[in-house]
Length: 248
Image (tube, rainbow, N blue to C red):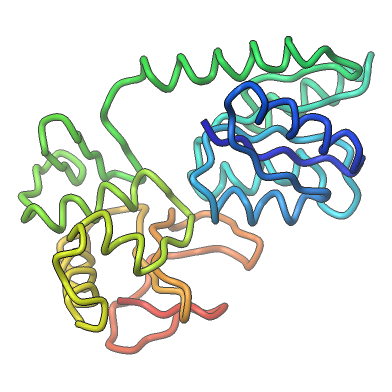
């Protein structure tokens, strides 16, 4: 299980990440909220541990930003002793749990393990907007209508839906969809992403974008982001979605 740990106390981040790695977790350490937000999108993150009172972008702001983008990864907030209002605000912002400083590392691990068991026991269906995907039955619905997708498009959509709001590199999608069968220099990926986007054109609440030089992203639409309100785009060849992204 991969855990992103963010706190402006550098020593604390080092202690937490070292301990977690010793007991079997993989980690990414961050020292401010913006780096934590970036890490949540760029890594295959299972749990995020956030200090509430970080300067610049607080843990509450990171939590709200992730939830607005449809990222449902579990979030555990670190709060000061007696900061009841912070804990309530964090839970209302979308956090799943909190831990009061100072805390024992064993308790942190126990709480992370609870998240791990929930992930294992949760239903297999994945949803974003009005798109629902069932990996076990290989079925997809848009609203109340079932959508039949070719195998490669289904696998691509599953990979994107498991990482909402995150930029997935071309290599990662090739590995997931073709397993090395297709030359990385071919345009097969672009063709399949374009076809998948066309199949999802009547879906509400989701859009596939490409981030130039980095890869592809499935994100919630009609929600506020750090760059304004994301709305359903009009699919025009070469149209730009702003902030370095263009529509497929």
